[in-house]
Length: 318
Image 1 (cartoon, rainbow, N blue to C red):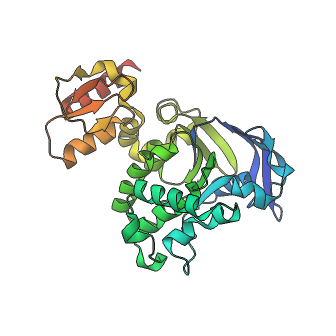
Image 2 (cartoon, one colour; image 1 turned 30 degrees about the horizontal axis):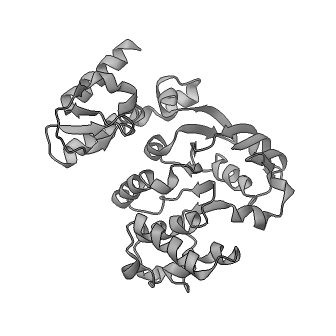
Image 3 (cartoon, rainbow, N blue to C red; image 1 turned 180 degrees about the vertical axis):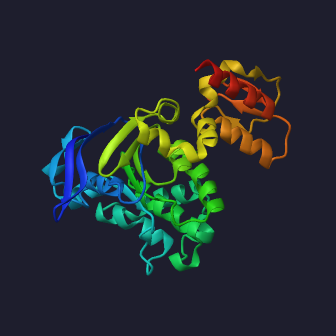
């Protein structure tokens, strides 16, 4: 879907991004992770030409991004920034309608699509459609920004520190909502963050960057368990146990958990991590919970003890 070949960006002789290449497959979420100044936001903005590359080639869905005007390119790519970018003098409904109006959608189509997204994002239309941004909380503003980015159903979504301005509790909640949005199932997403936990929760693949280069690319599990160099190894050391549990998904260790007896109420799905299982057990103050596989509808029983046992077994076998 997205192929970047040997792209670089120089600012007055300073090499912000140095000859990097990567590929994001259709329907995949790629996370660019690293400390401030490593080049991750510059890389993201080159994909929709908010920043023009100094050199290199980029194609999206087989089309050279330089073959059309930047404004036309951006209408086909959703974009969410940290500061949400909402127009303060527009209502929620008017903010969401900006791109559809540019695309000359009729008012009925805009209204139907906007309302469907607001409901998905837990912003009831009757309560929020006519509010202005300064009447919303930080989390609500970011939900509106996501709705605006998704309203025209772009195949690609770019997100630059989308949850970075939120407090930790709100941030964790909206990440969970974001991950479960039906709207995102078919989207190709590129997300920038400096939050390692966020990268492990949301990323199918992670590009770890330092000083304008990609140090290592891989799944969360590959980065945490198979670092390719000293930088990758040391980058995750300060929270290694949590990240190891976050990298391990129930679906990849499915057979190691006991089948549940029916009927049960499930709290988790197989795409979630062992860390999320432990968090949910703690938050709900339960001795056991149940995990459902969405494809087979099979259900497994988990406890703190079984998670710990599976984790230790996996570690000992590596």
